[in-house]
Length: 276
Image 1 (cartoon, rainbow, N blue to C red):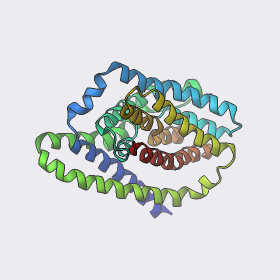
Image 2 (cartoon, one colour):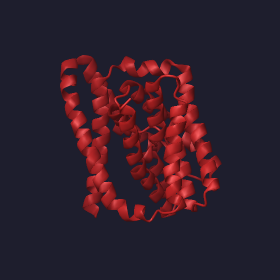
Image 3 (tube, rainbow, N blue to C red):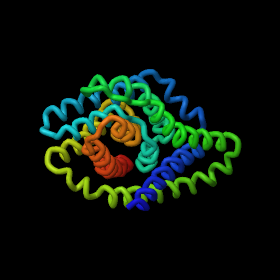
Image 4 (tube, rainbow, N blue to C red):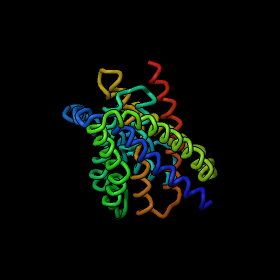
């Protein structure tokens, strides 16, 4: 089991680094910065992910008779946004990967700032949320590889174009490994989530996707990116918070459940979006 856990962790690191490198190798810095110069877009993205989704989650867990661990896990996830898989989803959906990367970076930075400030207000008790740990993992695994890719693209475009294809293949292989190892390691725990807890997990994902789509603006392509960005929660940040602050294993299990169930829902949604 320890070997499988090690392989899973290595697959996650490989997926994140390869995905961010492939994004950087295929984009120009100006393509990422440009969307962030649009105040309305920034306001909608922040409002959707850190106001509407948390409020909808609070309503959801108050209406459904879920256990306390499920409630806490979903609330943590509602404030955790910005994950590397967003760019992969945009690629699958044949969407604007530059916009997806820009939104992802905006949500990553916002999560580090907003999560430690707002989560204690939503949950009872003294929480010890160290944003420094979240920031370090996001910078090392995501921002630095993206920056390296962007730098190579700016200086050696032909080289970048050639190696981007290799990085895309590598990230796809790593993603498949993640799905396999995650299912083996956590399948039993996930199968134990039944009834209203499972309903809550599915509804949480669907609500996040729907809110992102409805508030994504008039452009279909923008709505697709907004939807996928809102649906893809930052599992890594959520797990860090859960591990630091809660002894109840159900909190971590529900976060892992969202990662597995959510992955299936998001892949299906991305494929459906790509048919348009």
